[in-house]
Image (cartoon, rainbow, N blue to C red; front, side, top):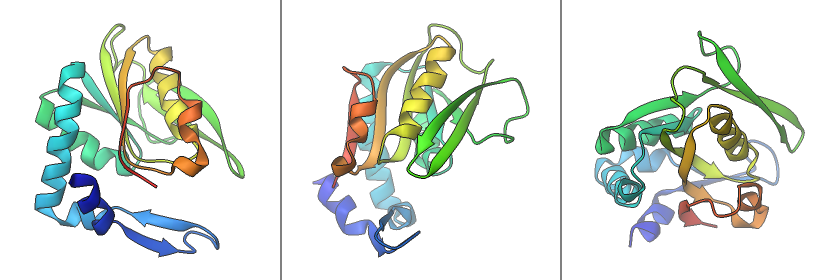
Length: 174
């Protein structure tokens, strides 16, 4: 089963980036061409029936497999970035972190009103970043038809911040 293979590949780094946090490192998945291909195939099997026009990937780890998914589906890829990284006019969304706040942005002209998007990120933790990405897409008047994560930390209840009825796939749930 794919989720078991992913769990075995994910490296857990204790006390990173600070004491008490067990960081889930997906780079061993990326280093394995067979496992990463199997993951992208599984993502595509879930995503294709949703008929997205774009995959929206969240900086930075959401870029890697989000772009691969977009290529596999034959659709465009749109990045969600931190402030100051996108050169054209943007929508911005602020959100809260455990200690402070952050902002994400997306180019205004990249998403056409009414298009269908799937948002991809590597991790769903507290849900703030994913919620902000959904709000960015809402500002652009597009339809978020699904949200995909490689890892979900269910004990942090991040799913609760996402709109009710959101089609969510988390490959691995801790």
